[in-house]
Amino acid sequence: MESSRRAVASARLSTSEAGVGASFEVGDATTWAGAVGTVPDVVVVNPPRRGISELAGWLEGSRRGHGDLLELQRGLARAGPGGDAVATA
Image 1 (cartoon, rainbow, N blue to C red):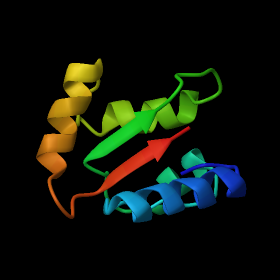
Image 2: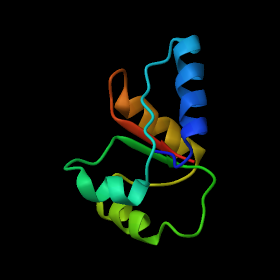
Image 3: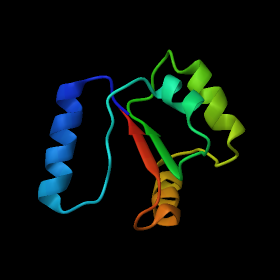
Image 4: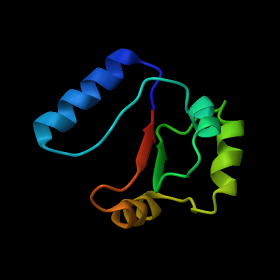
């Protein structure tokens, strides 16, 4: 989830060229989180920033866990091929 259409277009092109299966959407992550019924396997907020307090509360309530790069690696491994992963930038 990214607010910049240009960044999403670039991410889509890069993953396509690399043969990586990922999806990217233009929009607001907090709005998206309120509209979905399930919690994705992985959420990356990069860089961590102010202004995500509502989203952070939603993530915290998901009980998926959070942490450092090692936790990210574990989350990506849990998602596996075809798993749900959301990256916010």
